[in-house]
Length: 177
Image (cartoon, rainbow, N blue to C red):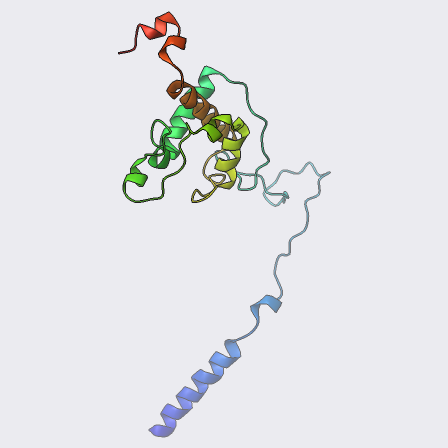
């Protein structure tokens, strides 16, 4: 009986050793070839390089876009995206007192600090793209256009929180409490 068990173990060990092969050196059935850019064939076998992103996805290494024109639609989109991505840390007013901070996370700087009021709008876009301090990059979560919209909305927040009531138009002052 011991000989049978020893023989089985020996065969199992030999088969395991035979299975250990460097898979990197194995031949491939299909090798990659660059696409024929002159071909009009749009069939399923046509390869395109670099790969085209799927609709509604965000490329991780996208090229920076120029700042869009400031419009009410851009500010509305920026407000929507800000409330989704930024308020947990920065708060609804941009004062750095979001819900995460109240639970012990490090406080981000207030957008109303002198240094950030004087910073160019592109600074907010770059911070959202590359991250800063404890804040990680949002480039893979938020599209470039939406990062610009958020930056524009941060500027609107700064203006709304740092403007004296006497500087507001009479129609707006009448609606204040």
